[in-house]
Structure formats: C-alpha cells, structure tokens
Image (cartoon, rainbow, N blue to C red; front, side, top):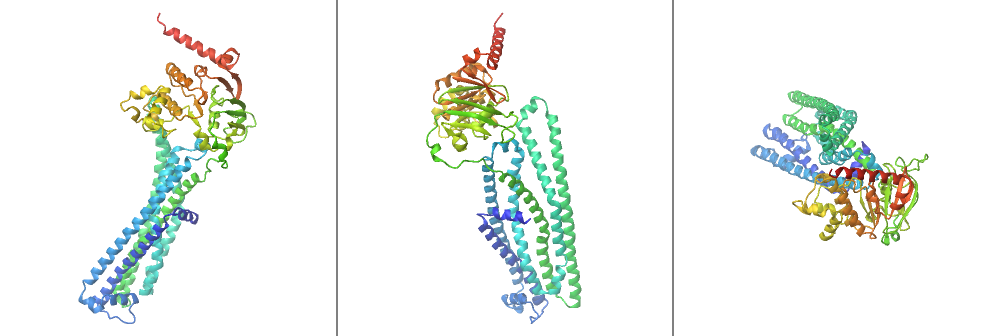
Length: 614
C-alpha cells in the first residue's frame, strides 16, 4: 500500500499546491461543521434548560456562550442559535465546494498529463513490444485505468485528508466535553476500521481480475469492429457473438463477485455504525436519568458521531478505491517501465550533411525471435550484402518469408540488426537517430494505413507544409489525381477509418503519392502496387521513371512487370541473396527469377488469348 501511496504522491507533482488549498478548505469545513453541534448543545443546556455556567462547564461551551452574549442573552434571543447554525452550515458548504473544485482541477490536470505521457511513451516503444502487445488492452490501460486514477485523486484523496483531520481534531474535542462519553462513542470505531483494512486485503486481487477481464473484453470488441467486413463476408456473426459471450460472461461474473463483496462490507459496516449510535443513545439516556449527563451533551455527541461515522465507514470505500487504483497504477506502470527505443549518443556531424541515397549492406543478419544471431542459420536475414548507388533503382524479389520486408524494416530502424552493417552514405545506420533516418525515407508499406481525415491531410502526412500544387503533382505521379477530383469534396473528402471508403488500389495510390510528396532521398515501395491494375501500374511506373535519379528507390514486388524497369534486381530466398543482375540478365539465366518470369508471362499470354474474340 505504501509503495502505491508513494506513486500517487509523485503523480501530484505540479498540483500539490492545489491539493494544499483543498486541504485548507477541508480544515475550515471541519471547523464549521463542528460548530453546529456546539451551538445546539449550548442552547439546549444553558438557554432552554437554564443550566448555570460554572467551573464544570466545558471550555468550548463557555467560550461559545460568551461569544453569543452569555446564556441570558441567548435565552432572550433564541433565534440567534438557529441563525448561527445556518450560517455555520452555509460556510461549511461554501468551503466544501471550493475543496471539491480545487481537487477536481488538480485531478483532471494529472489525468491529462498521464494520458499525454502514456500516448507519447507508446509512440516511442520498440516495434517488438507492439508486435506482442494487445491493442485492446493498451486502450484499456490508457483510458479506463487512467480514469480510475483520476476518480481516486478527485474524491478519495480528499476523503483520506478528511479522515486524518477528523482523527486529529474529533478525539481532543470530544474528550474536552466528556471523557466517559467519548469512550462509549468510540467503542466500535476500532472494529469498523480493522474490518475495512482486512476487507481491502481480501478484495484487492478481485479488482485486478475484473480489470483484466475488462481489458480482454475490450480487445475482443476492437478486433471484431476492425474486421467487421471480414466477419460479414464469411457470415461469421453468430460465431463472433459466441466468441464475445465468453469474455463478456467472465467480466460479468468477476464484477458480480466484486459487487457481492462490497455489499457484504456496506451491510456489515451499516450494522456496526447503527449499533454504535444505538449504544451511545442507550448509555447517554441512562446517564441522563442518573444526572451524569445533560440532554444537550448527548445531542452534541450524537451529532459528532454522525459526522464521524460516515468518514470511518468511507475508509472501506477509500481502501476499496485504493485497491482499484493500485491495480490501475500497476498496469499503467507496466507500460511506463518498458524502455523506449534506444537512441545513439548525439553526433551532430553525422546528420549535418544531406543524404545522397547511397546504401551499403555487409554481412547483414537478423532474427525476429531474439536480438541474437540465429545459431542454426535460419534467421530472417542470413548474411546478405549489396550496394545501391545514389539515384539507383533496386528491385527485390523473393518468395514469402524470404526477408524482403524485414530488410525494409531494418532500413527504417523499426528493428536493429543482430550482426553486420548497414551504411547510409558511409554512416553506420545504428549510429544515426531514428527520427532523422525516418525523415530521410519515404515508404509505402505492404498494407498502407490511412487516417480518418481528409485526403489532403493524409497526403501531407510526410510534409505538413506542402503547397496544394505539389500535392496535386504527387497525386498525378501516383495516378490518383483524377480519381480524387471525381469525389464530391475532392481533396477535402474525409475518408473512413483506415481509408476504408477507398478501394485497395486507391489506398495504395494515395500512399504512393504521400511518399513521393515527401521528396525523400530514399524511397521504399514494399509491394506497393499489388492491388493496382496493370494499366494504372504502367502509368505510375512511367511517372516514377521520369523522377529517376532524384531518389534512391527500393522496390519490393511479386509482379515481375513491376521490377523489370529497375536498374538492378536481387533475388532473396531464406534470408540469402541467390541472384543479382538486371532484368534481362536474370531472365536469361537459369534460376528462380527466370522460372517466375516464365510462369507469369505464360499466365498473361493465356489470359489475353482467352479474352480475344473467337
């Protein structure tokens, strides 16, 4: 518990002054609330019952009567008592509002900062972490868990302060009025507190199970909504409904268990609290009959008991919410504890000169499972070496799993290679800052991702200051300009999530235009035309040919017609280069490239012959 309180204290950084102000208001609220029973007690005993003020009169009562002009004056002006009680209650209400306002401002500020930090941290975590992470669970941690922390900071921190203030002031105050009656009034306070503590110890693990179940439920919902078109295409609605029912039932069962435990706590604490009031009333009435206690004093003790019992019973809720917050902070801390992508020491001289686009790869090894070289030689890349001159167009071919996309990911520093070397203009890639490297590369991934924004905003992703004429020029190069103009809103058209309102080919062309607009010294097209028809592909390749020499271009494709225009082709298989040369050279050599070329050309010939009219 104390470790989590330390974490909470660190979260208050920058907002501790507001919480100090809120605690100051809380002290005033306590003082005003304590004043109301004192006024009632003094009025009943000394104004109504006519008891004389003497040496046995409690100091606080005597001081209050003096402030009100004495017992005789109060008896003559009884309206002063209810007026004073109303004014004290109003003042307490005002400072209670100020307390809540300050605490809410502070907690909202902390929650906003925590969400910003989590979002920024997630954007800087290694690709390996995101490969394993569950997106739905991450969303749960960044939203629901942060909200749990916010609610605790907004309400329960003040309740903790209230309990401490009551504990520090109530006991001395009541002892000054009557020591025997104080002992009676506090008889069951200890058992309630102990029960709250042991309840928290028991229920803490239940909160974790509920939070994990909610995260799993969120993950299923997100996955289903993301793939809703696939679900409908295969008529899998009923199957998905059944799959959803499992985590939904698990979350319900665990939540019901938590609610059952909380119901037991509130029921038992209600019983103990009412028993404490009953005990105080019974003993107080007996002592009044014996003349050992006055009616006004019993009124005061019952009023103070009512003020104190609620915060004491709230200790259970405070400890309960502390348990939830502890679990939430642990889950949030697991994200924050993951180290960010490592960055080399700053060397301004390495990034001072612009990149020409020369690439040198030597004995490059990489394995997806670990950062170490695969001892059996079956890594994603196993000792490849090649050179690319500035402005050269290099095509990369190979079967699925040959290591083509892995090579692109290494160039983007999404992963770090296990052994070997990659150099850009003679500068070791591992010694260059990741943001700078990625700023030099324009890339079109296998599955281009578009944001739910306007087409213009998506195109400007790589260059936010690009003017409209350059945006249109890049769109023309990608053969998407005329398509965009056919939309009612043109470049201002808002596309759906992941660009779902566009066809696959249109998404790829927008992604190509986005990469071209960036004007990078190195352009990577990772199977970027797989969804584009042959005629449009020819137009795009022609436009890229006109830009030849402006950027070093790496093209990955399975369609050999895409690769035929490249200056040079390398063929990968099982993470190794098995062939290299121009299209004409490789088509003339016996090997994988020639076999693929013959298969694809024969298929196209048969297809065209079938389309000819009889």
